[in-house]
Length: 224
Image (tube, rainbow, N blue to C red; front, side):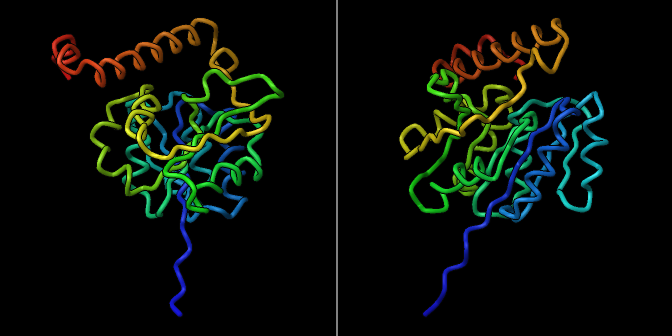
């Protein structure tokens, strides 16, 4: 009887100014042995993130942009470069990523129970109101490839776009108990954090406009 080849998984870690946490995240992901490859995309970081990533040069696939292009472009580059059946997106600012978290994230896809998985941070009984915008996700690579031209320019609206693309598919949300990711206020100066929050909100709104009112968006943004 012919044996079925095991499902392979590529981890994609988008990185933008995450010098304090990225090494820990990459080391943890590598140590688990669950991924065929680990792809890190340095999205024009202005801090020491590139140097931290270069420490793993022989163990990861490193893609580096000179200028910041946005999270959508970083993920699109990782997806295009990946060689596995599945791609798992893992944020670079997580402080306590564990094997249990990754197992919970991957299991529904590996068991054929989902078309996509969203893993959201869960603390106690408190609801996570931003669960639908989580960065921890798993998809079949082949399902994403036809959408790369939309994913690439989406910047911080990429999660909103992915939710829309897969709205008719079987999407499973799994709680990642006590997972902690640093907030912008914890990573940046107050002014930098405010600017990034405003930029992120603006990019999400732009993505919603692209999806819901494409003609109006084209008129308002003729240069893109």
